[in-house]
Every structure is written in C-alpha cells, then in structure tokens.
Image 1 (tube, helix red, strand yellow):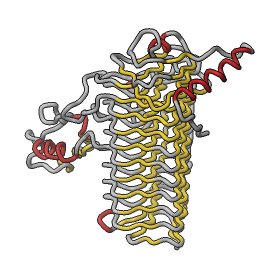
Image 2: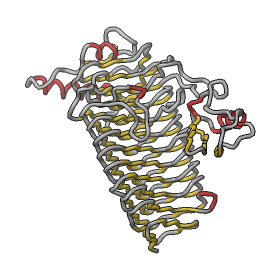
Image 3: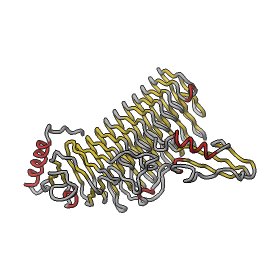
Image 4: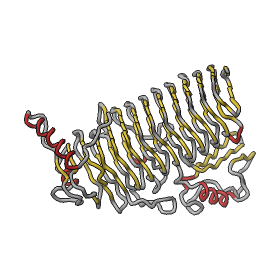
Length: 472
C-alpha cells in the first residue's frame, strides 16, 4: 500500500508519536526514537537511535545526515525508519545503512547518497560502499521483508540495495545460480516510488537492486512507479540459486541506461590492442600459436573482469571467444527446483548495454512471463530474452508491447530441453531489431513442441519459429 505523507515533518513526527503512544498505553509497543539533528553520532542522531536498539525511528530534523562510517542496525526485530525527504549521505566510500542480522526493514521518505564520481577509471577501493545492505542470518527461516516507499539511492560505488542470503557475501557470484549456500528464509522486496540512479559504477558487477538467495527460500519482488537508471551493472538482478521460485510483479517502472561500468568503447579499444591480429572468436586445429594472447591480464585491461573469456579444447580442436561483459536492464537467474514467474506492465526498458530483459531458468521449473504495454528499445542486445533449460518450458503473453531498434532480436523465447514453448503475441509492434532482420524468435532445441501465435500485430522484421508452430 502506498502511504500519503503529512505536509510537514513536524506533522509526521506528531502523527507517529501519537500512534505509538496510544499503542504503548496498552503495553503493545514503546515510543519511537526521534532523530532531532543531522549529526553523525551523539544524542538525537540516527546512529544513536540504531545503536540503542530502537525499532521505530522518526526523523524530525530538517537537516540532512552526514555519516563518517556505516550506520548499523544489529537487532533481529523489524526496523522502521520514517523520514520526510531528508538525505543520509557520505563523502566517503562506505555503506550507508547496514542491517546486519536479517531484520525486516521498512523505510519511508528518505534518501541515501554516496559521493558519486565512480567509473572504470576511478573505481572504489575495497570494500565498495552500498546504499542499503541487508545481511540474512545463516540460520534464518520464515521471510525477510524489505519495504521501501518514496526512497532514493544514488552515488554509491557498489549495489544500491543489496539483500544477501549467501554465506559467501560479496563473493557469492551471479548468473546460473551463482555459488555459496544460504538459509531457509524467503526474501520479499517491495518498492513503491523508489529511484535507484548512478550506483554500481565503482566496481565490476554492482547492481541497482541485487538479491542473492541461496537456500531453499523464494524471491518475491514487487515494484511500482520505480526507476533503475545509470547503474554500472544490471538495473535489477535477482539470483535464486537453489530450491525456490522467483515471483516478480512490476508496474509503471523504468529500467534504462544500465550496464555501462565496462565501457564498451574503452574496453573495446583495449581488447583490440590485446588481440592484435586475432579475431575475438575462432578456433585452432592442432597446437595453439605461441603468440595467442590467452586470458585477459591486468596489464592489458583497466579491469580484466570486464572480459568474458572462453577457452575450450576438444579432440585436438581449440575454440576461444572474447566478449565485453556489459549488463542488462532487468536480469533474473533461477536455478534448482522452482519456476520464474513475472508480470511486467506499463514499463520501459531502454538503452541498456546488454539485454533489456534477460530471464534465465534452469533445472525443474518453468518460465511464465507476461508483458503488457512494455517498451524495449535501443538496447545493445535483445529487447526481451527468456531462456529455459529443463522439462517445464516457457509460457508468455506479449500484449500491446513494443520492441524497436534493439541491437539483438526484439523478443526471444527459447527452450533448450524437453519443455514446450507457448507464446501469444497480441497487438505488438516491432521494427529495426537485429539490423532489420529478426524481430521475434521462438525456439525449441530439444524434444518439446509448442506454438507462437501472432495476432493483430505490426511486425516489421522476420518471425522465426524453430521447433514450434507459427500461427498468424
């Protein structure tokens, strides 16, 4: 539920205190802690309230809050922080707010701002600071719920918001389930009127919102009227690595201009110089030449992590490939027993430096993704991409949606194993994708079947149906 705010900060403080006092009279809860100044520490500061174990905090000061080190809440009870537009900020590279014991978190009307100015040539020293970090306990169960309403996060070097249920912390990895173990808890994230902008530009693979879930729990993500822009890696990345489902519902939101930490122009020039006379992919039949450059090095690249390098030998034939690792607008990886279920409505995914939307599911579980009035345009690769490896298949409704001028295909639905592919496209518009060639692609690479049905749509390019039936 989206809440309305009183017009003045003092009115908000009075309302919250009065409510808490009424409940407190019956022994239900204590009075909230009031933050009455913008000091980093001491009486009346936000740090003092957190360290004192307060679970309800109302910021009444008109001042912004300058921090010299991370603000840490170590309790296990739910923490609520109420602001009216104040900014928690730092001029240094550190995390702004850390929830260290997996407590539920609700924040209303507050901004978080790091120093900014980060890029591949000006990275952050380790550890790179985050905006909001929630660390789930290894033995946690039930749910961990993070609710942000009217919140902005900007200028931090690392993830804007990070919820981690992974015992490897920042070494958890991403994609294909990543690595590490986690608790049995599920993670619920709810964003209303949240803006995450200009974060993740101080290190490789730092996202706007990142959720790592490595135990038997689920990920549930809801976003309404929210924006994820100018992020170094993915605007949003949800990684569910073991048993559990991913359920996401997004409305009236934007995932634009993300994925550029590995600047394609700079890294492309470095890669060309590194390869010399070699192409970025190829094969050798026999011995690998002595002058072949091999794995990326720190001497050749500002950040060698920006290069994806594949080197495989099989029966005397060696294949290799180099690629610049840019990122997506909205990325979900689901592995283990569990499905990926997504409803994206009235939203846009534009100018991201890899795919616009990139949803991957492997093992036992389906992809069930619906797009209603979604625009994907000018992304460097595919506008919409859904890939499933397992027996359950891909189901998708593509209603009133648009894919225009993407570097890859407009929309792709692909199944690598025995599952079926069933796609219904109604009232869609596509053009200028894949250099004017393929606009829509539905592929079944194994023993399954399926259909792609296209009705009342304006498809300028080719529709590819491979292993499935095309109905128009």
